[in-house]
Image (cartoon, rainbow, N blue to C red; front, top):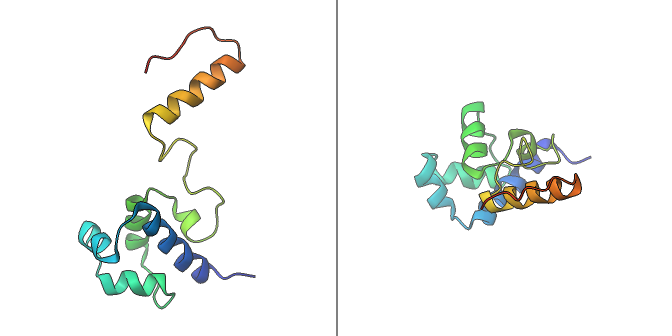
Length: 105
């Protein structure tokens, strides 16, 4: 069984790489030392709850996902999606339910 600490280190690095930031850029944006970010990603250090929350907010993912308790990266299905993605999903649902109105983009 994979441990939460291992999952966290993998997912925190995955989240950073997905947005294309360096550890230093994340450090500058949220005020966490670059060395701490490196240690989180290498499984050498675990963040406190405030830092964990700041990281989840910055990466736009749920804390549950970061620590391996959730399958979804986000707390809900629309968090992290842009306006056009949401509108497309609404239009698709409306069509499926035979709702004739088109949502304005």
